[in-house]
Length: 328
Image 1: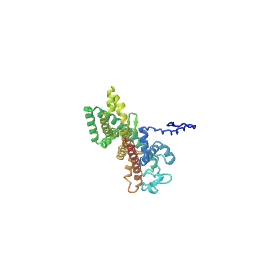
Image 2: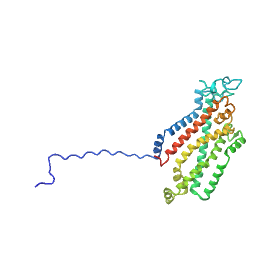
Image 3: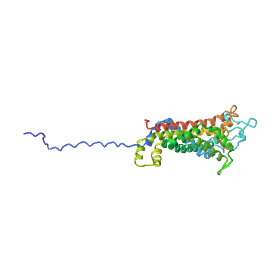
Image 4: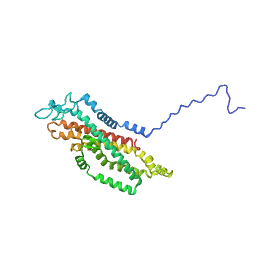
């Protein structure tokens, strides 16, 4: 009688070994944002230009010694004594003066551009920091607490948004003493610019943060923190603020070019740093007197402002898309 299975002398075949499963690594939000940002070539190009501009401002004395001349050193031999214009065409551009010389004094425009970048970027970054700190604190308090706190802060923001910042800045600079709190000359002017631009800029970020805080205060993670007995301070510092990093970072990147334009406008109107300290806005103001006969002197600082603002805007737009949780 046969059995269902017949035994044979051969050993049973071994089951094929399974291929090791591919390990799936989790990615943090930072890595996801960085991978998105790297795919945006325009934003990366803007970021590279921003980094180069910052390096040029930081190492302005080194660049001046290698490629130019001291920013405040006059070179009358480069100026026509009769017309006050550079001897060479295109604003005096030559091998020794890469971007030419300024009219009347003959100072190296390249050196004044890189030193002017120090002024513009310093004022822009510091005033952006002032705006972010005040705006985040006021916006979070207004959005989370609501009620009379929200009403008061919102009315203050409305007043500041309607306030004539430009006129106030000019009036304030005109009455500032030459020495104040250990600062003198250019230091006083820069401190005033930082405080004025930063103080009048915080309502913009305050409104953004307020809206975000109002939407997050009713979220599940905030309710969970409340149910565990967390106080308002813990919720604000540990729950809301970490979730506001992305919009705050994006806004800070986008407000810097606005601050650069504000500093240039104030310097153009004579409310910026004092001469002979170089400033892009001040160079444009000087160029208005001779642009018809020497347009190069107006084009160069204008291009410096344009390229800087464009680079920051392109990088800020790309950073906003990269940090968007709904992005691809």
